[in-house]
Length: 123
Image (cartoon, rainbow, N blue to C red):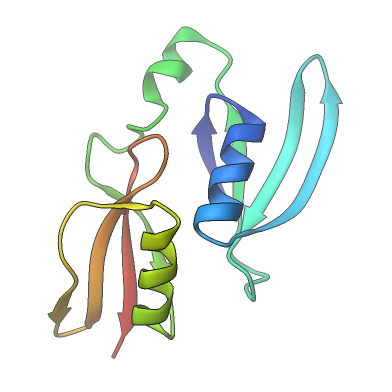
């Protein structure tokens, strides 16, 4: 599981579950505005994101830029074109064009915060 800083739980849940088709695994109230929110790609039990709401000014400054502008996360698929077209129709912002690499078909997209993801169908 990887922690991903967000500014709002509900906005993040909606974006990842609607735009990327992720599944909400858990949303537990921990009191004082804190929640334990776990999401992940459908069909994957071992890969999950913990949506961690930024609570300090320093944390807020890192939302969307946890890796200094580099690709942060990698989302794999076994049907690139179908998933790419679905995501594009949902309004996912791709920052380049699909390309064929030695390792597979790939494109970079940004999530609602500007984090960069590689979307890949391996060879």
